[in-house]
Image (cartoon, rainbow, N blue to C red; front, top):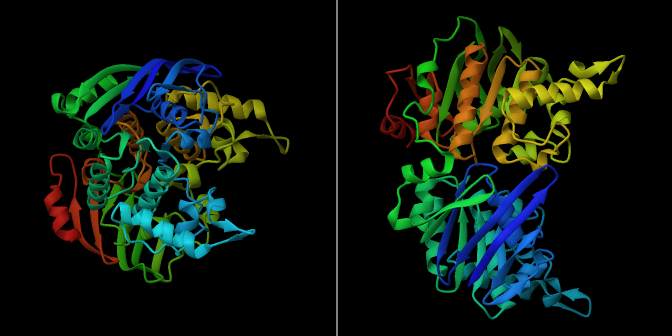
Length: 500
């Protein structure tokens, strides 16, 4: 079906793809894995028409392609579901599914909304999903929006006669287990009409859904396997060049916390999201909160970070009562917030590494009332070296960095600001195994330096492995507390009982 041969792609100071060759056969799912910065996203965007190769060829059903943009790729039956999603949140579901194709429903300058809505319902029905097509996309869960993305990609069937090629870039990164199974069931049911390329850092998922798997490293394909012939640990070792360490979460470095209470909440409540929450975080302590979606744990972290005011109970920071109405006073109190959506909330993507790092504390780079850009760049260069950020230099735009390196920039910002309290909201979401290990090292470093950390994570393993103490929330309240000291970590099943 598709053959990419000898693909080369260069960016300033970086060769992103080096002589990459892959094949996608009819009616199969091809997995694509690799560490952040290995070249996966660049290859996917190139196949989707977002980039043009500097060398090599792409053929589809024997026809050589020279894709100029995403619309060009769509005309050849190639669609992409992006990790960060490409939907316009203030448009309806139907408007998003047919965004850019409104002419198909327009007559005499007027859009036939009834016809568009009916067509959108048919597209969703093809993948077995029942979503109100007149609803604003912003009202949907992330999982539902992912299904809308898939339905949008499948509209290409109405434009081309050949089977489709759908590129799935980290489609499961924010889905729970049930939603992942729904997505996988849809993909399997569509294999008779389309082929897929599936990118994920979750190796077990890649093996579960894929027929074949390509492994990328440093911009090149280094291995190809039938999914049935390889295990997740074997793929991990090929991908990062070392075996999965038994001391994955650096538990041996977990030290007892200090005596000073940095965050204290008693009877805390907020707008019906949660109530009666008591918690305490000491200097150097990592407190994890486990819970299903809607349990209230996200809202608790946003209250501590200054994004959601509490309307009941009290909260103290370093012994001083506070009631934050916005993040600014929280930052002044020494609180840093690392959000789950780093591209939307954590970074200004068009700014440089240097500019993003200094944002929370411009005083660190000021001289005579103005920003000293030389000092700003030197500060960023120091963090690039200390945190092993892979980038051409301090002036590189953050949008050009891999997810792991973007996360390091966010952490560098709060370390520059001297934050003594950090809220980590899914800090390793979308990161590969190697990048996760680097983040775990940084978290342990911060804990040893006395930083108090409030953590929520995608996985119970990560929550248990990193934390000194784990709180479990359900229906807006804390239902259990577990000591998680080294050698005395709770089991996942214990947390699950309290969660459900």
